[in-house]
Structures are given as structure tokens and as C-alpha cells.
Image 1 (cartoon, helix red, strand yellow):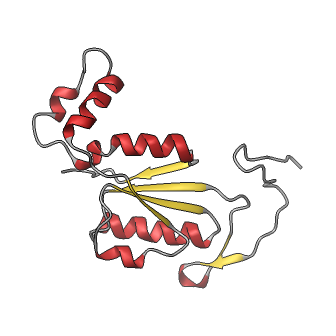
Image 2 (cartoon, one colour; image 1 turned 120 degrees about the vertical axis):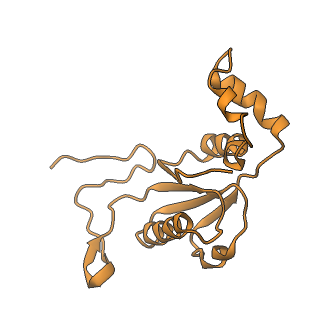
Length: 153
């Protein structure tokens, strides 16, 4: 039997028997053998389809014993009250453009390649939350980061 140790939490994944969690239709899904730290990045909890999907993912991951953080550009929306207590809500914020542009230039290289397209229209709040996201990732180091692909203005 090959044993695997998670570099984050040192748990042994092989041979660990955990209770099942009832899924849709009464099927029992086995719990993961090691707790993972999962971050879900969504603009807000405004109530759209992406927000509902991320909320459902947070519920399932949390119920299965994972540590779950929901990262929000802005901590607002009607779905905030539906977030399980075990899930941590983190507001990254959307600082003024003046604080974000230097970071974007550093990340894109000396010439700022590709930044021209960002400034053709309104800079999305999700992009403006990049400093907060980087700070979170450096501090918390989640094993998984899922982001809403439609983080637009």
C-alpha cells in the first residue's frame, strides 16, 4: 500500500475510513481522506448563477470537512445570509485604481504588455482586487483556488 502525505497538513490519505455524506438522490459519496484548504473567488454574493454555484460548492466542500474561504471583491448581496457558518467570508476590496496600476505594471513586465486592453474600458473591480487577492494567497496559501471566469465590470 502506497502512503501519501499531504505537504500542507501531514495527514495520511491511504487507509483512512471516513463516514459518507449523502449526496443528491440519496447516493452516499465518501468524504475526502485529507482536509484541503479551498478558496472560491467570486465578485459578490449578488444572487446570480455563478454566485449560487459557488455557494453550493462551498456547502459541499465544507460538509465534507474541507476548510473553505469565499473571497469576495465586495461583501454584499442577498446570498450572504445563506453562507454556512463553517465557511469564511473574506472581502478583498477594490481599492482605487491608483493603488492597483503599479502592481499590474510590475506583474506584466517592464513594458506593461497587454495592459492597454484593460484601460480601453472600465477596469473591472475584480482586477482592482488583485492586491488583496495576492496578499490573501501569500498569507493563507490555499491548495485550491476556484475563480468565477466572468469577473467583469
